[in-house]
Image (cartoon, rainbow, N blue to C red; front, top):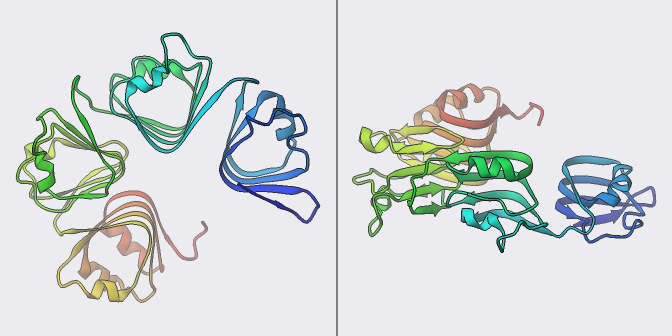
Length: 315
């Protein structure tokens, strides 16, 4: 947590992913704090809520009141659990609050939510068949709940990498009913000779070779993106990067850019060069470039979730 004095003599709390005040039982716990900024979520006891509300706040995504004395369990980041994990220990209804801050991926259906309060601040990915239990058990949602196809008894295998070879999709040693679930985008980097999964599901976009047989292609799906086919081999980039003309000049044949994050293109990248070097772009995130390059980037996008903007556009 960042806390520093400000020019007015008080203290400022800033740049915090999750500010947990549930251990602060004193009414004076926030004395001296004059500003809170850039905080994803604040957990606050109900008795401290009036004091918190009197503090100027900027870019605070969510405030979650917690009953005084109530125990909280907080999970942050990317969490992978079975559906039974939400039932909580024991058979009786727990009085605890479970808070998910980030992405929760459930590998089997939810039949019961055993917590008194279930708060999701982020994305919850669950198999179909969980809708009724989650609908009744969710106390608060600030984000997204998405459901993926599921067959009773299927083994759900997870892949967190953005790229996988076509050979790996043979699922050697697995069962034909297995489901492969990619937690983000998924680019298949080579031809698929044998698909050993009943379903291949990506939370983001799925980029598949255009030589994939129609029967196999029909088993690919995307929860929050698109299934796109590529004609040129993909190059996958995750995070932040900056591309110059020199990078694209290195390729003797076109590529497909699969981008997940924030990317910029140098002013020396000409639209003609980009069109010659790139056959298609799959984007989850943001691309920024000169105004003359933006139309070419838009034209090359075969799947897009995010923003294409020039350098002088507002954030």
